[in-house]
Image 1 (cartoon, rainbow, N blue to C red):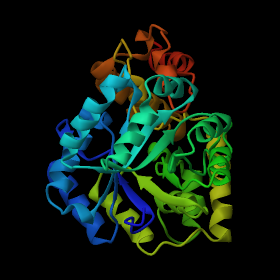
Image 2 (cartoon, one colour):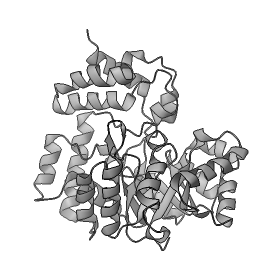
Image 3 (cartoon, rainbow, N blue to C red):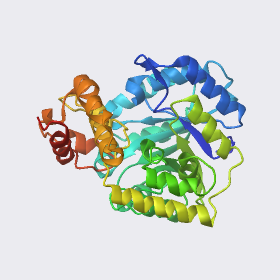
Length: 370
């Protein structure tokens, strides 16, 4: 862990897209800017961007820079293996996809009560620890999406876990579904360094309603992203805050306030608290657009995050273009909300524990009135 230079990481889940493919030229520029600013931590997973994330990092990072310039994390996703025998071939394919001989961090992906049972049955933790003993993994950890009591169980059963990646942001801090604060406290209890994912909640804490933006403007400077990321990075024991940047502009903004990081002061923390209350009153759908609901098995191929985004736009901004986006783009791309057959696969995959089937009924009522 001593190779990590600063507490800000480049998440490769939302890379820039051009004409349906990853924009390699822009991603290379973003990688260069990130490294030039003194940062070196990159986070990916085999399934991100429909399998394009790891190969993109090979093209934009690992083939262009010496191994000592960067710290690379990837993950073992439960839907990609069925038996213990599947794990090592999958791991080898990840090394090849990323163009490296070892990973600095290898995380058991999206751990929850259900997925943990599968990982135990397939001896995934034991396999990862064996890979560490062989020098192919430097540190083993988990990414986590469940209640704090489940996290405590996992850390008790596997004290060898070195880091824990949790969803942690000011909107979810006391949310009873996400339990951001309580999960953070469990990590502190067990002495595990924390990696923060979703500090801006999939963009929800950037694309704020006007009353929330006015609160931050009154502070006299700083983007909405700056307050969200600095909120998360200011907690003791937070080793890394990840940002899934999609444009060079986002990269430049993030670097501007993380290069010489300072935690939120009292006035800024008070403003964040006011924004949190505004968001709670807005009654938006707290979807982070991770797309696990789609990627892990919607039989109707409904683009659920896009439909939720249209719904949020209409609720927050009374956005007239939301109807056009719904009917002419999102529904044509992957089906309407009313196409849902209520199988429930999406809800089992959702890290936010959203009642997706119920929400799709609401979306259909809003956009399919005629």
